[in-house]
Image (cartoon, rainbow, N blue to C red; front, top):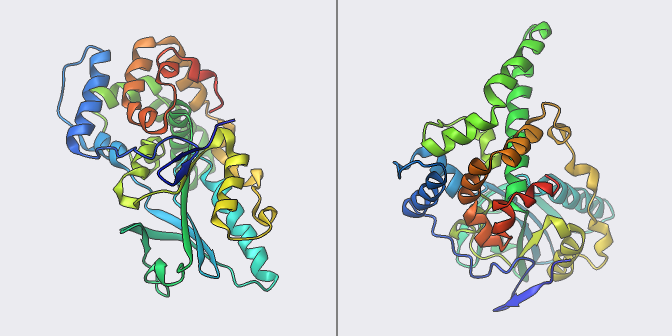
Length: 316
């Protein structure tokens, strides 16, 4: 179990209180060039897709509150986002049915304003208007290589699913599956394009592979807690105790079934194919590790475990 560390009144499951990533074009360029060297490529021009992956910050947050106290969840894609947000929403909805004055604002746009995010919605222009007693801001992260694998599987599945939904004649589904397997579930091709700069923007679904550490940049101010999904039960309980939103934390307990959706089963073998490639191609794996290096530094995961491939044995 991860030990909680207290640094300047900020309690975190990851010692990232000083993680002030330089979200600049220069730092994105340096990260990309380090990865390119692993595959024998010279430094090259920074391209838009990688810059977006490097600097990506979640566009929305969820706010839960009562009696002047607020809990703000900033989601990181493929880091138990659905499970955490969904459990809080269901729990808060049940509490409201019991006559309590709890409120939920899901999918709220937020950006940095002094210490805490500002929320722009019709009836709540500023979160501090109702969160006058306290605000507790948190997120969860995971081992970076497993995060990338999960993000790749989500990207392939979403593209495939959209193809099915767009098909007027369901006899074309088999053809769509063949095409997605050939064109989109191409782990070697995707990594090579990421490194040589020929990867063009493949749509928002690809942002599930983006770096997690972008969520900790100044766009969302400071966090009170960053949990690990490897220790999700204890860390989530810690969040509820610290936020003091409810007396009985069991009312907001995690519901594991909310974190399972279509891509989890990996029916297109996307995660499995990427995992097999990274296990057998040490050069590409090390290059990918260098692309993910900001996340390893930010969340204090073992970078050597990525380089030697042992991270691949973790659940993705």
